[in-house]
Image (cartoon, one colour):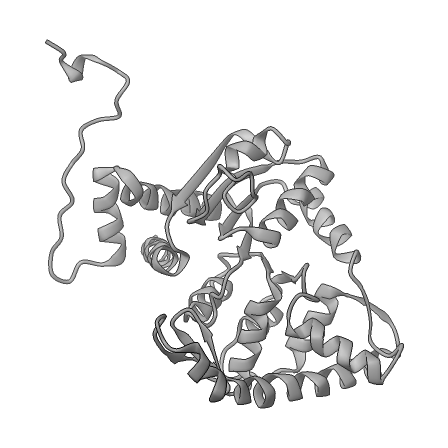
Length: 325
């Protein structure tokens, strides 16, 4: 008869999770850790790894892809920025478009994924899965203010060539203090903000419109940020990356380690993408070891989950732990 206690290939017994009235987020995560199984166990390991990054004073990269701001994730990210739990953010342009629209008083609304899109088209309402936004909000709370900002930035810099991150910093400097925004939080807390595909967003579209009317006034070097992020990696001793989704932001961080000839110490990836297609978003961190981007002995966590479901739990549990110590 096989006696499991006599073997060393297991990590201990699975302990059923307990729940009780008034339990905190971290208490729930700790119960998940006791079970240690499936994605609940992986979520608990994710919190442990994030905590280890913070305690080891690692330089922490956070990458954002997907429509996180319309889904209400902006204040979760702002909280991490203000608490010093992230040092650099790499994001798609869309998340900052949405963030800036909110900063100028725009809104997103709850909808339904099965709504009639032809009816929404007639009403000039855009749908992001089950979130709605009025095109009027985009125009009055983003397009118009951004063109004014571009004009002010162009005039104050006298044709100087800016990197994308420098341009974003100039925008963040000028937007309202309230409501809170990722842009303003990064600016005020000296968190580096990279947007490698800014041209693939309304930031880029409006820049093209501005430059068509004002040729040679707003000048951006799209390659300069590569040198800046390489310099960060060369300077910092320990580093970790938290990948929300995947895509270009993930690659922008990973390739900086490849070319800086250094490797990430720890990586957390939260994704629903699959690895079998060979695409980057589903590629597990272990694959990046073969490229020299992640240390072979580093923590490599893949939490198969939807970001807006898992990441608030992770952030909340981490903050609770750190506040107790």
